[in-house]
Image (cartoon, rainbow, N blue to C red; front, side, top):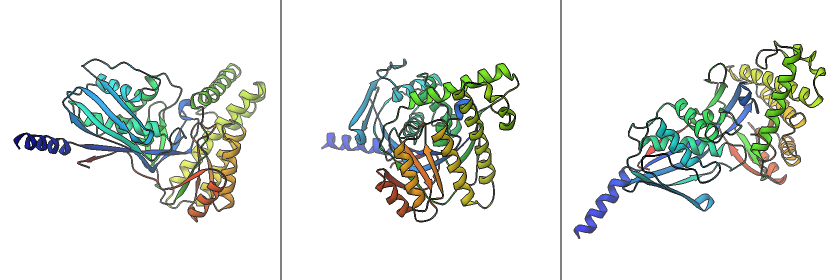
Length: 375
């Protein structure tokens, strides 16, 4: 009887220490393929989230169950950095990044990871996972939980991008950690400013097409950067951040055709983002204008950067015919998701997207990383 009682006490003690942390996915309203160029973006966190729960265990190991994908993650630690076993080994990289910052664990953790963000679809499921995991690990660390969402975002970027020398930027990590609608700038320093939150609905559409994130990022980024380098040989004062499209137009014909088109597209994308910022800073949102700006950006992403697909184009067209105000591909492109602004008839629009072959989710905008104790 005493043994069962002691066991019950230990179980209750662990349950009392159970912590769950969730982080949202995101859509990029304006500025796709801009953050890695140090150009501004506007992001919005969405109400589809990843949740990581854990309780302490005496063994010095991490054991996480991932029922959504029928997998699990396990590794032991002994005070040193844990070695990576695979590409994008995010659970271990977050552990290592936190350890370097002085957030050490003296006990192990067992828990589970669940989520309803479409995976590998441009809605930042991996960034949301890393943000939630870093926040959770810090809660059990010797230094205590990290409460600054911007610090969590910086550490998550290190764990996902810097640690594996990936080509992506950091907008996803700030979007998932801070939440809401954000105007993000990355030069000369990172600046994150909230904009008016939109209470209307959107419809997210997953094309169910896999995408080559690394390949597309490398192609678009490489072409733009090559074009900028060539342009600066002709016009040394050129700046992607400061030079006007009108000024650049006189020099672009001297570049190879593709590089000229990509630089022009980047400048147009930048200007649309700034227009979006002004629009979302107003007390009352001009909904039709907002939709038109989304459509204008999609035209650049489709026709210049070539990151859309015929299926996503068809899903967007079906959504527009069903009453959406505007929309665009979401994320790096080549597959994955699109979204539309749907302040009216979102169910009808979601049905149209599914009839075009996608999987639709009616979404609203959401807050950032959250901690729940004794869930």
